[in-house]
Image (tube, rainbow, N blue to C red; front, side, top):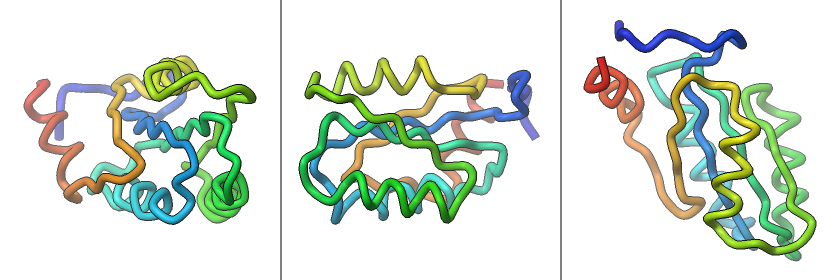
Length: 117
């Protein structure tokens, strides 16, 4: 399909979602990342020290889908730091960033990979 190959882990794309106190919005963003037509994708959600139900939501998302991984930051450091933490935990050859209150079109990643080829 595209010239971008998978990393050694077999994951081609890492979707990184920084979040803080967005328990009600986060599942929708994660769902749009998982619903991509490109299947060799992981979702790394970085929780920037949430004090709402976000940690419980992340636990449920991780248990229900092996492509979801949560990383928790103990002390609030901001969205830019959370993105950098996510990038350092990513296994994919390509990084894609998604905000916790946004949604992706199902072909977004495929179209971007094709544009990169």
